Length: 205
Image (tube, rainbow, N blue to C red; front, side):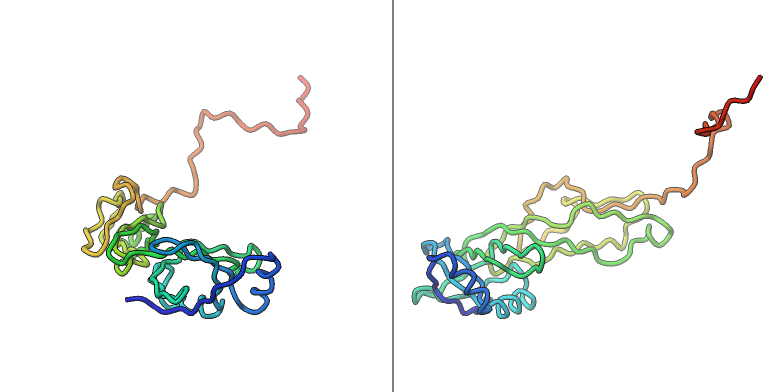
């Protein structure tokens, strides 16, 4: 299933046109890929933001370009460093019958047994590369950590197989681990030398 987004073809010269578009609430963009040449377009920023918020960054976006309806994925977005506003977007036209690869967010589900008894949970991987037909691409990959005890860890290969997509990321990549909490104080050895006090004069013999 795809979500529709209205776009307009745009000119690329002069460069000042980009600034004019942004001032009018439009985002300069480009679409290319399956059965379409690279085409400059513009899209309403509020509509684009709403679409991404409601359907996710891996949603299939349907648009009409040059009188032709195409299915796309948002391939890349350039954000303003200071305002986080979208400044430019690249859309990739896709074949709905062919698999493609995108990143999906890892989301931990539940509270581990180890954490409940004082263990420390450390997440080492936050995104994975997945492969699927565009309509089956996940927005996130959920990882259940409920049964993880102190000393346990999970790697990509431990995740259950999903019929809709394949995880491409190396199976040995560690996602999360539960370890013992470190003591806040360390014992000082009796044989350890006393610290030198800077500025203290030596006592006269």
